[in-house]
Image (cartoon, rainbow, N blue to C red; front, side):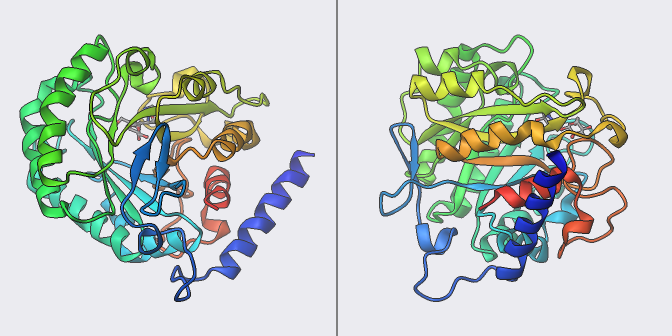
Length: 340
Ligand code: IDC
């Protein structure tokens, strides 16, 4: 049965690639990208396009641009757009060594390059202030304010940019801490980009929505981010309790990171587990289906060939664009086939 599903998945993916080699939409035709949908806004819990139609963004997240900037080239973005992706998340770590706090110039170079590549492939781009080790966004709030001022000044009237102000608050960080951070950063973005969609991280690595549900931020065009990693080490279709409860609450949610993992231990480990154990990609199917059914936007982690369970490219893949099925891990195949 699983074999059959895989075969179906593969043939769907190949067909999709064959139909859409290249991402340009025929003139007049409605494509998934910025040229067809324009500026986005949030209406109730839904993301809407310029014309007020429900909009679903699907794409990949980069790995940290400090380490994997090379996948943000123009050809890579064309390849993703050709497979149906309409958004790219650009993950700019604040820490550790050589990331933004230590080397802002380099991070900005990579970020601008990534954004421009996504734009030229007609995709939306998410500028992600990727806190992680620094679990509380207030630790670098001054740097964040300057950063978001610069980016939103540069792209203020560009409809394609979404701002993700704190990747994964964690440790003791409370919803009140995040609110206080958001109150400093959001007005700065709003001054330059009044209508832009802003994504806000939630406590406990984007898994605790009690704050946004009970005390949402008092700004428009905000979505709260949920992150999810699904264990693929043993056959066990995933359950959707968290996302179901968020959707039922009516709070706008954007899944800005999700992927596969091997066991609890693998969640945040450097390097991740051995790839031999990654067998049951189909465990993630109920999550993909749920997001599809409810029109939830997502970006999956990550577009890299790092030897870990979260990667979409095989570790021996040396291509920086133009990937075909044989360059992708099973997870990569799953993701590429889910863009449409
Ligand atoms: C992981 C990377 C891994 C890196 C680690 C620490 O995949 O190569 O060594 O970060 O920098 C998250 C984070 C995201 C993690 C990812 C996978 O937002 O930065 O990337 N993850 O562990 N939250 C849950 C999982």
